[in-house]
Image 1 (tube, rainbow, N blue to C red):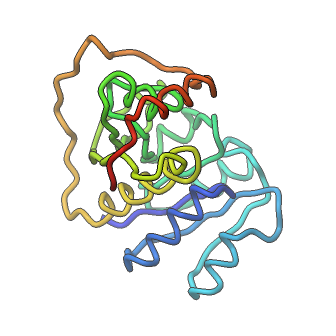
Image 2 (cartoon, helix red, strand yellow; image 1 turned 120 degrees about the vertical axis):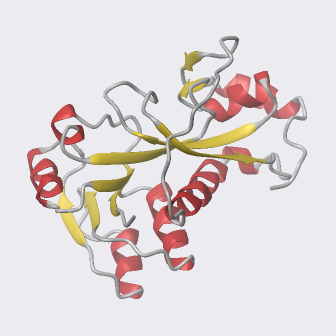
Length: 213
């Protein structure tokens, strides 16, 4: 299955596209949305002679974005949006949006779940889900476990983007896409909010991050 890419102007989107190019993964359409005319994503596409489209907006739900997305024949999208964006039902009813979440689902929904998972279970997962109208509650199609980073500083920088991009590339290289059936632990079944910076530092100092990828 070949997917479209829809990418906001973020470091995560840049890492997605960079790794997709590196892995020689074939995609259909590439749609970049941003308020800026020139972005690193645009430059990366031009450098690698990739066809792409850009729209000037910072909302996936804007009229111009919705119109363009619905115009594509291919229904399947890998979505990397701006933080906190929720795709409206008008789009989800007609297109399949897949998103990579840095946590084992359905146990760890919400924000900065890497820290909560390290605190509670001492492991790190990424899950690829089909986006639904409820946050982090869509059908799960792929998951990947990661070792903890050797460099404790890395968790505060690009670790999240790195493991998501690895997971997305592995997912895109699959020949068959099947939903994952799971048995969740009610002990950790919850939605987590943004982890306080002080709690993040306490988790790191506890020594949970002493293994390499």
